[in-house]
Each structure stands twice: as C-alpha cells, then as structure tokens.
Length: 525
View 1 (cartoon, rainbow, N blue to C red):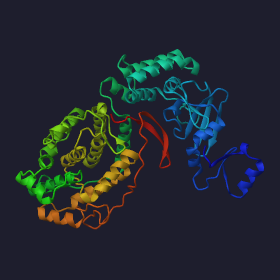
View 2 (tube, helix red, strand yellow):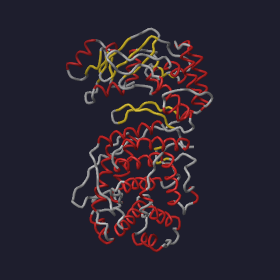
View 3 (cartoon, rainbow, N blue to C red):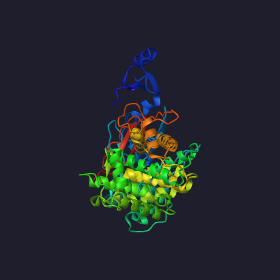
C-alpha cells in the first residue's frame, strides 16, 4: 500500500481537517488524500491506481480494455464488479465500474484488493462490443479490429498452444461473464485464423498478415508509425550530394567505410584502413575484420550499387540480403546474406523475433510512399533496419548502407557517423527504440547530414584535416564533441532511459517518464 495515500474513513474528521489546514495533505477525490505535495495529483493517482481502485471497489476485476495493460488505458480504468455500477473522476483518471461477474478462480489477485482478468476471460469480455461514451472517446471494450490485432499478438507472444487454451477457457466462462454465443463464435473464428485452422475476413492488418504467412511485430509497427508521423511534420532537409564525382566520391566512401566500421568496434588505424581498402592488404591476425572493411568499401564506393533502391517490399528484402552477403563475405559463420534464426538483443533490448523479420521489414517498407524527400526515406530506412536487427551481425553497418543508398539515389549528401558522435547517435536510436521518442533521432540525423555535407571531400588530405578539426576522431564521451565547420554545436536530450522489465508474454504496467507503459516481450531463447 502506498504510504502517500490517506482515506478519510480511516481517520477522525478532525485529523483530516487539521492536516488540510496545516498544508500537510491535499485532496485527490472524495475521501481520498495524499501526503505527497511535490508530485502532480494526476501522477500520484496514476502510480497508486491499483490501491485506490481496490479501496473504492473491493474485489472488482480489471477487465475489458484495461485487461490488456493491467491498468490505465488513456486515463481510464475499467472494472467489473458484482454489485456496483459507478464512475469515479480523479485527477487525470476515470475509474468506471460496471455490473458484471466478480473474481473467477483463473483471475489474478493484485495487491490492494483488485483482481486482473485472465486472458481467456478478457478475450470473452472484449468480444462484447460496446458503444463509445456520450461526448466521444473510446468504448470500454475493444472493437473488432482491435480484438483481431490482440488475438494475433497473443498468438505470436504466447504461442499457438496457449492461444488454443485461451479459446477453450473463454468458451467455458462466456456465459458467466455475459458473452453470448454469437460473440463467442466470432472470437473463435479470429483465433482460428491466427492458428491457421480456419480463414477469417477481417480489417486487421496484423491478423491478415499472419493468415498470409508473413506476420510482423505489432510493437515495432506502431513505432514505425510514430517515426513516420514525426518525419512528415519535421522541417524540410536537403543537402546536395557529390553526384558520383570520382575523386570526391571515392574519398567520402573511404571515410564512410572507416567510421561505419570503427563505431561498431572494427577498429583500425587510418593507415591500416587505407592499406585494406586501396592495397587489398589483410592486417595480420585480423583477416575477418579486414574483410569487413573491404566489403563495406566495395558497396559504398560503387555509385551504381548505391543508387539502387527498391520498388517493392520483396526487392527491398533481397537488396538488404545481397548487400549483407557482400559486406560479411569474410565471416561465413554469421550466415552472410541470410536472416537470423535465433533472437538477438543488446542489453535489455530484444530485437524483432526471427519469425517476424520478413513481415516487419515489409511493413516498414510500405510506409516509404508517405515521404516526399530522400532524407525522410533515408532516416526511416536506417531506423527500420536497426530496429528489426535482421542479421546475426553487422546490422548497424547495414542500416547505414541502406540509408545512404536512399540519399545517393535522391542526389543528396550521404550521412556519415564519426566516432566523435557515436554516443549521441546510439543514444538517439535507443530513445526511439526504448522510449518511443523519435524527436532526438531526427535531430541527430539532421545534424549529421549537415555535418557530412560541409566536409571538403575533394582531396583525402582536406577531408582528414577537416574531420580532425571538427573532433570526428574523438573516442571519449567528454568534450570536445563533434562540431560543424561553421562552429555550431548540438545539444541532444539523450539521458539514459530505464528499460522495460522483460518477461515471457504479458508485462505488467509500469511508470516511465510519467507515463503508464505496458506491452509484450518474448525472452531470448
């Protein structure tokens, strides 16, 4: 129980009134007070919602739309209670209890007095379509497309065997929770479509993709949407490219190769990198690393190759695989040109499951038609490849290769990520990937586009001198950091973001940056 919440029923009225007069507590709602005077009332209620809900509606069940997160959905907590039908307005939160079945044996009791509906019960109750409230807003239960999306998600993250069990259990409790036969039949059809046992006509993109055998990651799909919206609303960005000018393009391709490998940990001195690229030398004891550098240069220095972009999603996938096969030709153990077969992760960040790689890349590609400029397409493609992480190795380099191909095709300057901007670049990716904030990534990529376009690539010595003068080789996180030639600098809000708790399947809601967050995660096998 939260020590900051007080209830009038637990104390004499004189005690409550006295503490109010002395400014020791403040009121959150009828009979509900808090000793936390520094946090906004909405945040106090949000972090204590289970306790407050349990106090107001003891033995109620979190269900309907709230069952998916275990808590608030857009500021609403939906409950089922066997005796009470009531709506309570609190700062930033509305608790709505409807008449319905109380806790069932399969439901989970939570600290504070509430129960969480089992997934089977939640499926049955969300099959009961409801109307949107007067004045607008979302209905308390999922609409048919949202229900189909959830079924598809459960199939992916909980597995076919569990989903089949959910269907059986949902049919068993349907009458108890007030779901009629037609509604149960519709749910069964959706689950059958996800399991591949019966077809279903649905407007759910996710379930249709699963029926077609190309399922995708719905969490990443939503993240792609956020980035696409932010890119379309961002200021225009155009920086002319080198147009295949032989000396300049060759110089730039070398430094692109050098830095793209260096920030991934394939570190050579500049002289060693030059010998690998221009003399075909393999540095002693580092044959595979030397191949990585040579393979990267072979791609990025080829103006014809870097002018190729895909016209359809399958061509995009094949182009990605081909370029990976060239880049990773010296490492047969990482399956050059083939997508991963086992999950991969960085720290606590789990990348897209192998079974969803094709579908998620295809879903990402479909959004490219939304963009008006090569810069927008490039930034979007870079994130899609990095976020999916489709290969065993070299995903970062491939993201940047695909990004720069979009820029070259659009006659725009490439984007090079020097060592002196590595921390900011990676942190901006993490902010989008882990906190769904695309603004920092877009700002970072805009800065790098400006930076790359200002370097004099006409001669190698000119380029190296300007790279050095702008701190491109700085390997520490301390100043001096990367600066533009005109002296401008950039400040990025890239403070660390706590990662989500990772479990198999459902992740209970948690507070991150003042927001209630929830989702589904699958552990690495």
